[in-house]
Amino acid sequence: METEYVRSLQTSFCRINLDKTPEENRFQYGILTRGGIGSLLPCTLRYIDEEAYLYYDITSKQNVRSRFERTVIRREWLREFVKAYEKLMNDLGRFLLDERNVIWDPENVYEDVEDMSFSFLYKPYEDHSESFRNLLEYFVEHIDYEDGELVDAVYKMYDRYEACPDEYMSKQLIRDIFNMGAVKAAENIKPIPVSEEEEEDTGAYRKKSFGDLFKYRRKRQEVNEYVNIEETDYETVQVAEADDYGESGFGKTIYIDPDSEKDYEYKIYSMDGKILWDLKGCDCTIGKKKDEADLILEDRSVSRIHARILHDGDDYYIEDLNSTNGTFKNGVRLSSFEKKKLKCDDEIKIGKIRLLFKE
Picture 1 (cartoon, rainbow, N blue to C red):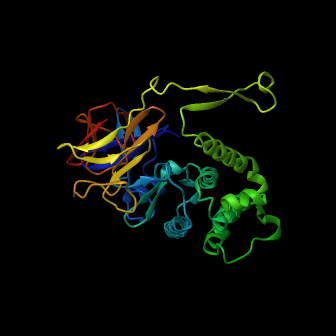
Picture 2 (cartoon, rainbow, N blue to C red; picture 1 turned 90 degrees about the vertical axis):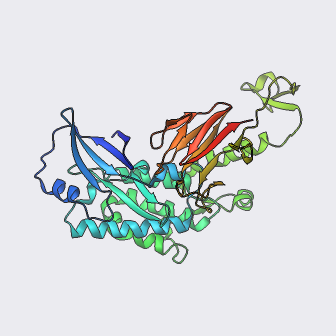
Picture 3 (spheres, rainbow, N blue to C red; picture 1 turned 60 degrees about the vertical axis):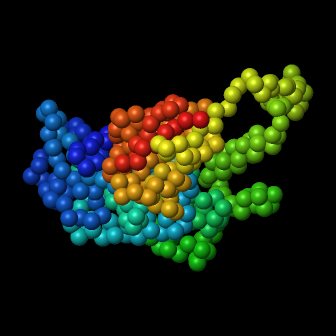
């Protein structure tokens, strides 16, 4: 299902195009568009050029995929999510709405980071229950792997969901998270420790069903650690064919001319020339929420988590994080969650604050 982000005045919307003209008088459309269900995103039905759209108000909210693009999910956050899940199930039951119509994909679950409240996207008369698996897989890939109990709890959620999806979502999921670390897993879902050497390094656990995923994550970590070992002008290059260079699979050490490539170290400047943030090849989240943003801008026009500068290879990108007053590159406003490539001397406007991206 494709969604798009649009803006009208000071309101941001997630918009879904309906395949056919909806029967507006049917129960679910009436309940949904009437509003007042705190767990669901406020929704309106609109017609544009004879096409029907559902508009969901996502003003000042972050979707889960964007929220954890550059950080990890911790147990405190997951507990708050499950509290919201419990409230959602109660609200759906109270208004006689079918829980199978909630869309669970991480880009369609929203959080207000100020009070950690969650809002869910409901699409009438379409079964999206299978999308809950997508959310669980996202949790598996983004949880804090230093927290063994959290890893065990999320893997248990996934395994039990796979065994009996409907019954698990309605009865057991909430208990599993709130009992995290307090109740031992049943024998058939007991976590399998990694090797002693890896356990000492990471303190992580894995399950049989996710062994390949864990090995991949661990291998990637080892590769990154290896690349950063040497801080000289020499680089050891690994080649694909080990036969040419012996069993080790590594070629000869070659000399890298330090002047052959220039590493540009970009910074964020204020308009009066003051360095506000040295990017140093890393990402930077901009906002006024001190425990969530890297670059803090204390201005009322700036959202709590307003924008993000992303480092990708040799390039940097500016991304708006569904801010209230907008993110601008050289005077052009970005759409919610839109990314634009930055060049040296580009002006970035965050709310009313103007910044410069340059060396």
